[in-house]
Every structure is written in structure tokens, then in C-alpha cells.
Image (cartoon, rainbow, N blue to C red):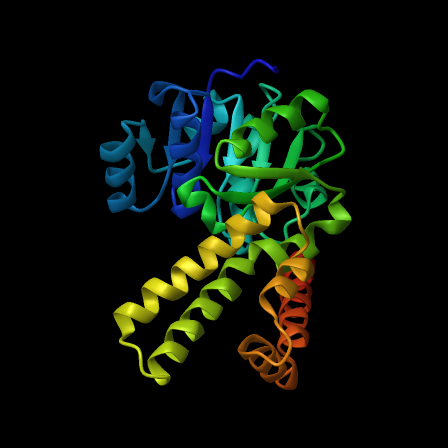
Length: 274
């Protein structure tokens, strides 16, 4: 197991930053005193300090000066500004930079900090990390070595499952698993509304729809059968399920999901190019 580095900093203390703090503390990878968070919002700073007993500050300068690993948990639109604030401090400690900004390439970060050679690992997590059930894809930049990648993977394994991919796949990951929770939530919301439409109370429809999705996912995980095989188990000849599936096919349900992933992937590429 790769030895952790002693000081882990977060530039940005939003929802995903908090999820990672929660995860590394729960996994015992770091102690509260070994973390520090730079967050401009005073209410967020207070919440993180109260909830996790972590040191907080408003400006990122102390993190560039004192942290061995920095998680850049900021919006892609402000990444350039954040990197500019690093000044000459970036790279002095051979810091590992971990970026979770959608669409921002490792090359963009490396070029912003040139001529210093700073190891960068780009990560695309998703919001189920908030309950330590996320899916994260990681890719290394040019200066990141195997130890850097393992260290970053260990941090994100604390909040769910991880995969290592080439950077050319990261926009597709953004379209699938990065944006995917929103598709699932929309499907769940639609199932609940459908239950109400056919006569169930909203409370009962919500319980049944939530458990149906949760149980179906558990069945996929534990049965070792493909989704197509499991769907066939539910679909008897001339029955209710095939009637419902026919309605989905008539509405191009699967094509719409594919279109959604493609649209989100294109938007990720646009964010990167801008």
C-alpha cells in the first residue's frame, strides 16, 4: 500500500469536497488535523469545521504553501483563476494536484503552472460519493507517476468505486456516470408520478419506486447476470411487463438515454475547449 502524504488540502469545500473529507476520515486515511480546506463561503467554512473538525481558511495561499496533496474541487469556469493564485508556490513541494473540474484537461493545468513540472491527476466523480457510493474515473497527467495515481485512487476509493482510464475517455465518463445520477433521479421521479397517475398515493408510490430501483441494482450486483437476462426473467409472454416495455420502445426510451449521454459528453468537451 502506498504511504499517504501528510497534509491533504481542498481548494473548494462544496458538496464533493465535503464527500471526500467524509470519506477519507471514515476510512482512516487521514485525521482531521491532517486536512485543511480553503472555501470562500463563511457558512460553508463553519459547517465543515463544526461537522468534521477540520481546519478551514478563506484563501488558498496557505494550502499551496503547506500541503502535499491538493484537491482542486472548483467549478471549471474558475480553474484558471485558482491556478493563477498559486503563484510561485505551486510545485515547490512536488505537490500532487487532483482536479475534479469537469472538462478541464490535465494539460490545461500543467500549462497554467509551467515551466514547473507538477503531477496532476484528473478525476470525474459523481454525487453518490456523498453517501460513499460514488463512481470515479481517474487519469494521470504527463508528470504523474504510478505512486501519484495510487494515492489519488486511494482517496476516491474511500467514497466508492474507481476505474483508471486514458484521458480521451474522460468526457464520455462525464456524460455517463458524472451526469448519470440526474438521469436516474428523473426516472425515479417519473416512476413515482406514474404510480400516482394509476391510483396510488404519492407516499406509497415513492416507497415502491425507490425500493424497486434499489432492489434491481442489488440484483444486478449479486446475480452476475446481465441486465438483458434479468429483464427477460421479469418478462413473461403476453404479460404486463412486455406491454410496458413495448410502450417504452414506442417512445424510444433507450435512444433518449443514449442521446442524453451523448449531449452531456459534447458539453464536457465544450467546457474543456473553453
